[in-house]
Image 1 (tube, one colour):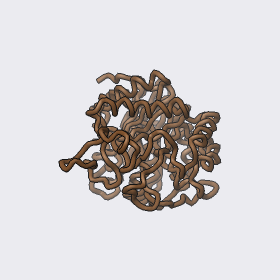
Image 2 (cartoon, one colour):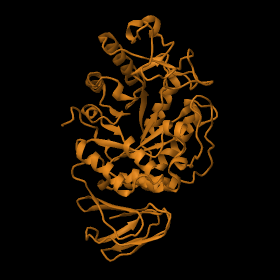
Image 3 (cartoon, one colour):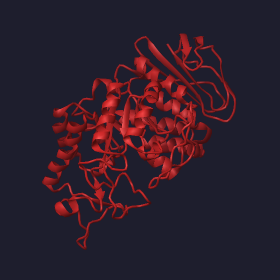
Image 4 (cartoon, helix red, strand yellow):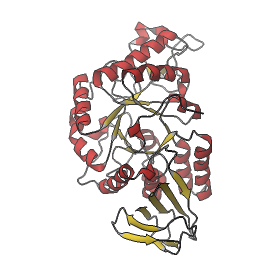
Length: 424
């Protein structure tokens, strides 16, 4: 399947950082977040994805502040965060530092008192009693009806408003697979004519790559969790990766992550879900064939569940303990073409090893550029060699800055859950 649209050239070696504004600062505002931009840029972050910046419905609201995803108006900013002008200022400040900015777009549903419920009630689906409803049983939202052509036109006009008014660089589309694919085709065709945009889909439906540049990897996220629970082994993880390789278009880019707002708030932090495997799997997410997605506070690291419907401040400390960890990985992605996502010229090679404990080892290669990754995914110290003959030459350890000449006789000694990344 050939994609109908082409991703922008800067996307393949980029990364995404999800911003939870409410919990990011005591003020929880656009203005207050600006102070974090230099730190994030130094860490190597390139794409800032802001959870929905639109106002939240009061009717049916959960908790004291409600869900970002229960919108009451698509054409203005949430006053909890500041004014539309404040958001424009934030986008401009981000652009000056070289960031790209995405906003979260919730097209499947709105909150119960969205302005359309009175201005355009025909935009909504009705149950057998003739009332608004949500097909998934979500209490604080109601479903839109994409069988109605005027809704489609109006929704695209609302999306265009943010492209025109705030000069955003793209959209992260919430639960994209719940909205008809032909709507997204229409929306991208129109909006990319205004300015070519970046399109991230919260879905894992292969057909949606006809429109979207990047999609989610829930299957692998749950695979990592199952690995930690010991219900699958390395073969199970590799099986999921093989599915992605065989079934998705070659140029489809996937977002790999160990946490996001849903997982953290509803299932627990990556340390609760993955335990000691959290960091080696974070290395994997930054080095496999995809785009890493990092959630607010992972650089601390934040180990608590953040409340979803109420204020629950991230406890920032200086310096962030994992700042340099992510900086090393993200800078490597930027400078070494062998980590580009969805690039047919990049080869990813699964490397066999002789460890008697689970260890994941792979090589990514583009021409003479190579990145070797070795992950000890066990609670035991291991020694291993890579006997395939694929890895030869002088490499640099990106974390310790040590040079090593590697061949099939090289012995790698790794502590429990230790990770190694070498660059050539």
